[in-house]
Every structure is written in C-alpha cells, then in structure tokens.
Length: 268
Image 1 (cartoon, rainbow, N blue to C red):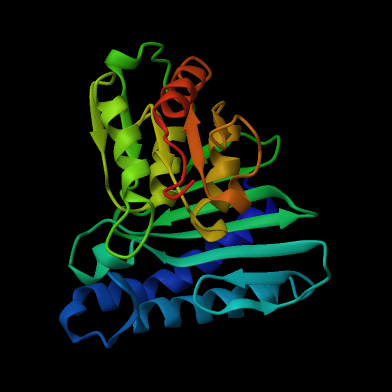
Image 2 (cartoon, rainbow, N blue to C red):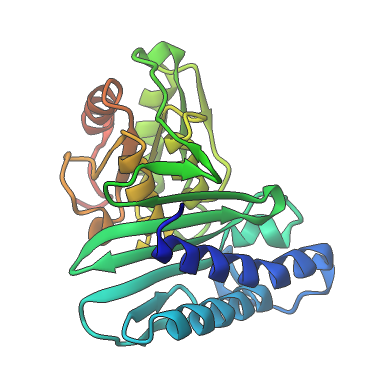
C-alpha cells in the first residue's frame, strides 16, 4: 500500500492534471503572457498551481507551500513545505509537444522526504518516500546498471535566450559529446530525473535549476539507488541549481568530466 502522504500528493496531481489535459487539447486558445525571454507562463500553469495549493493545503493545513507561479504563498509551520511545479515543460506544452509533468516535493526541515512526478499524458506516476524505495505506478524502480560512459545515454537541459551561461554549458556539452553514446534534451527536468530513476537515462546534468524543478526528483533518484549532487559532489542542488544525477558507477566519471571541462562562470 502507498504511504498516506503519497496518496495526498497523487490525488492533488491527478486533480490538477484534468485542467492541463483539457488545456493541452486546446493549446492554441490559451491566454499566454511573457514571464521573460523565451520563458512563458500560461493560464494553465496558474490554474494547475491553484488546484494543487487548494488540495495540498486542505490535506495538510499546517504545511508551507512554495510554487513556481505564486512563490512562497503559504508560510506554514516552518517545518514542512510543499515545493511544487504545476507544469514542468511549459514551453513544450504551449507548442503542442506531448512531454510535460506535475512535480510535487515535500521538504521537512530542509530535507526532501517525499516526491511525486506525474506525467498526465502517459498516466505515469513516479513517487518515492524516504526509506521506502522509488516506484513507477506500482512497479519498483532501479537506476540503470550501465558502468561505462560509451554505453550511456545522458540527459541535459540547454540554456536558452536570455537565460543561463551559454559559454559554460557548451564547454561541458562538448566534453560530454566525446564520451557518451548519446545526449538527450527533452525540456522537463523533473521527468529527466524520474527517467534516471527508471533507468531510461543513465545520467542527467544541468545548470541553474530552481527548487521546484528538482525537489521531487532528488528523492526519487536516491530511493531508486542513484546518486544526485551538485557538481562538486555536495548537497547544494536546491540553492545552487546545479545538478548531476546517475548511478553509482557513472556519477563520479560524469562529475570529473564536467569539472574538468567547466571554465567557470562567465566573467570570473
């Protein structure tokens, strides 16, 4: 049986997904406003976050809430906090690309203890609770067993117009291209991490992510037996936004590859 807290998160994600699925079917009719260069926020994001906040706060009224669109909208008890991305993959969504997700992480005293990533179009729920393993619907997950970079497919996130350090990223991309079997960029960090947990990807790296992009993925990867860290091997992912995830055989070689190639931030 699923833990009670996962049931709460599952129910919230599925209820929020109903509007997303409807809006995706009418994507050309969405009202869209600019949030920044090449970074869009849609009416769908806002409606989904409102539904998630309503469901989660109703179930756990003492918990805080941090959402991508609304910021720190609920202070809570100062111990527990939901960290939510109501629509990870907004640009995919708005262009009719069928790859997006809802991500919900639960933080307790600064540590992620449970997470759900729900992919509505495939009805796939990735979930984990600390010390309870990682799961895809009702199937136990394990990271891949590949141990050699030339056999591995690695996912990434690419900086775009007006965002990210392009020079820094391209240096690590070039180094990675020379060592691995393939690199994929799907545009949904929460699903990239879930796919690492499921063994679909052998690793993932990206610069400058936000807490709501990775909160759920952190616990799902770890409970699937994977390693997730910043590029120094530390645990600052939620603040630095720099993330590397892989199995125990590939994490250190990937870390060395990135560190050796990384020229440091532009202007340093």
